[in-house]
Length: 549
Image 1 (tube, rainbow, N blue to C red):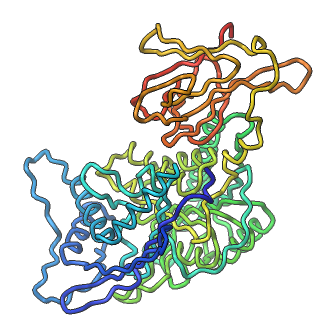
Image 2 (cartoon, rainbow, N blue to C red; image 1 turned 60 degrees about the horizontal axis):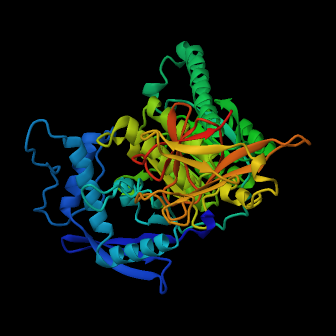
């Protein structure tokens, strides 16, 4: 499934206005359905504000609370919302996360919008595709809210974790997207700037005393980040077949001047920029503090990124997805992510709030691994977000921090999708005698008497009776996957290799390097002894065996 074929549902808050004591937000929805546009008004209530204040009180590290709208009713209380606890042991953080997520969902997906979403999801599922949902927040006062935690009800996944949805934010105020060329390698420029604000006199005292130790610390941090990136790509290469492996190269700049950064981008062939360092919101997309007396704003950075066709910019800094303020007034389209997208950068990933180093390293490694498996950028963000959720739990804010913005004309491709490569490979068995193939079979690890032999170098797996291996499990697709044998020799001496090709909605799990990895619409080589699960972690475990190997 090419990401260019994924249906897209776009939602936009057109404006936020006050009428008496209430605040009305007008939504404009563009869907892949005929007619495609829905207009709807939603009311932002004081209860929503109180829940957001309670969420900030529990999870935010910011010194001042954000209040999205001014409630004009003087009797309105904005004391933080308190959840009733039935017992002292009850998970207040998890319930608070869930309560705000459900409330935000109900505010966005009111009746006509919910119907548009349901119809769009139904159309996507009917085509065995994902649904790409893009949220545009034109009112800057609502940008700081964690829209990624929206969930329809208790027990359902949040929109940014849903395996059938690709969620990102966007902006329609953009320059046209330059032609993009997806490649076969991750060429990453890793930039480490200052970890303090040089404009704050409290943070610049004694800088000369600690400058050498700070440089050493930055170099250590750069090495850790580069190792996380390279490790993610290495694990992905162990999963991919040799024909689809992705190389990853990382060049590191520690506290460069703007001229050094621009020269490096101009003379390299980078498709990803990673930036870790301090910065602050400002009208032109914020300020990046690259090094001592070396400051660059978002607009300046955008020009060089677009000129050099950088596809993805990642910012490990708490300000990248936040707008600037003038007094109490939030400035429209002033966040770094929006400014970069506006000038034509295809994808920007920033943080909504401060993220701990260990959380950032976990995210970067999982994100790079997913990119190296040739997933689209929004798919890779979802996978890495799920990794943060697994490691740091639902009731902690880590998984809510990454914010992905994508240009409305961008299809999410960073590397050439693996399904496009598959079409270039033989789809039929080579014309050799059946006996020439090395004998192989699958067998159940739960029941030793269940063995399925692979005849003629081909086994079709699925729920439909016409398959060679029929698995009547609800998560197994009708035509789920194939195991196929090919002649992979480059000389006169024949050498055969077995491959797994996945066609399913939920993917195939492969046990590799001590953990389970999902193969989804991909092809990988199989070694004797590898364990497989088709469609679900709860499925039966089958072992692939090549006899006499």
